[in-house]
Amino acid sequence: MITGTTKLIGHLGFPTESFKSPMIYNPYFEREAIDAIVVPMGCRSEDYPGFLRIFFCLSNALGALVTMPHKVVTLAIVDEVRPTAAIAGACNAVRREADGRLIGEMFDGEGFVRGLLRKGREVAGRRGLVVGAGGVGSAIAASLARAGIAELGLFDSHAAAADELRRRLVGHYPALRVVTGSNDPAGYDIVVNATPLGMRHGDPLPVDVARLSPSAFVGEVVLTHEITPFLAAARARGCAFQIGTDMLFEQIPAYLEFFGLPSTTPDDLRAIARLR
Image (cartoon, rainbow, N blue to C red; front, top):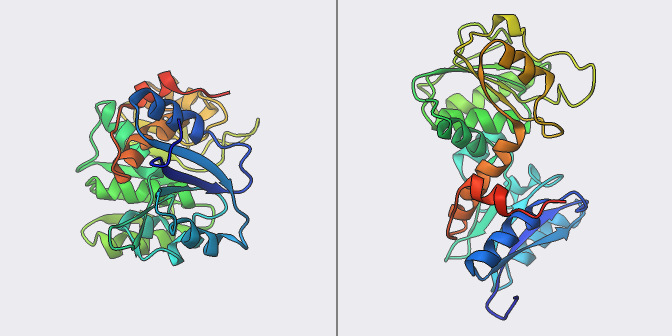
């Protein structure tokens, strides 16, 4: 039930037809009697900078989930950008502090790392390769750095994107060893496909799977189907792996904590979600 005390979390993006968050968060809020609601809000790019500020003028605005096409421009609107969002070059969550300042954070990478850790893998001191230096790849690289990874390999078909991500990473984590220019997975403990490869039939694999160590942990960000050709090939090599939707559900508890709300487990959220 929505009342005069209900806190609003705006899900801001355009268009809204594909939004899934209301069908995940709101059943959880209802079951737990949390007086909050996620509302999809279709906001075009030309209106967004002004609207974000106006939204947080509402006394019952708790926070915002930010999605395409607004993740990058949000960095210039908020008052403080957390390091993970700064490295990613985008943010997907905004909250208002008691003093009125807006804080921007990025949780795509946090979801990936939380999933990896919950599966019993370690990040600290390990070597990781992230293929794809766009928004989601940058976010995953930032969260791996935050979790203490010792070395990161970065590869993108546009070499300048990987080099720029390296610059941002070492600016925040000067002790981190970062190398660019190769997608060879040999010797890496964690290998992530953060490209769209695997969404369409006939896409090439992001790495030479024959070079993967069977002990490596392999991650995927493609959401269109669970077992992509890359994951199927890695599984055949004996690698442990994480599907793309795991990253989605793993980041929601982090969002809840960011907004100061009671949290839960990804498995609980999967069970209660009313996805169509």
